[in-house]
Image 1 (tube, rainbow, N blue to C red):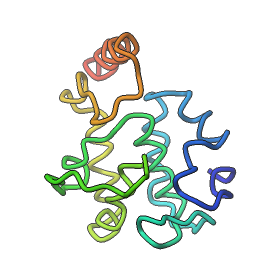
Image 2 (cartoon, helix red, strand yellow):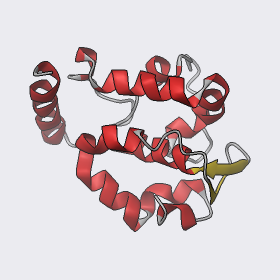
Image 3 (cartoon, rainbow, N blue to C red):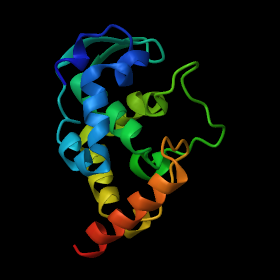
Amino acid sequence: MDGISKIRNSKEITKTEQAAKLIGFGWRILPTLAEYFTDQTLTNIKSECQNRILNKGEVAIIVADRIEGMPYAKVTGIENCTLNFCENNANLIEYYLLFIQRDGIKKFQKNYLNWLVNNDRIEWIPLINYNSKKETRKIIKERKKVILTK
C-alpha cells in the first residue's frame, strides 16, 4: 500500500505498478486486502469526489473493488437507485467512502468479509466486470470450489 499511497489523485490508484500487482493476484487476495480496510493512516492521495485526502484503508477498499466489484447495497447498506457515482472516476466505491466512514469501517469490513464467503457470491457478476466471459466463468468455477468447501 505504501507505493500506491505516493500518488496525488485517487483516479490514478489502479494505474500504479503496486496496484497492478495486487490486481494481478485476483479475487484470492481479497480477504488479505480486507485486513487493511481499517488502516486510518493518511496518504498523499486526494479524492476530488470526496474533496479530501484518503487513508490507506480507503485505498485498499478501492483496489479491492477494482479486483472484484462489490455489491454496494449489500456491503454498505446503502441503495444507490439513481446510480450516482463520482464524475469521471472509475473508482465506483469511492462514492460510498463517506458513508462507510459514517456507519463504521469495522461494520463495512465485517459485511465485506461475510460477502466473500457467501454462497450468493459464487455467481455474482459486478456492475462493471473487467474480465472476459471466459475468465468470469473460470472465476465462478473457482469460487464454487472455495466457498462450497468451507
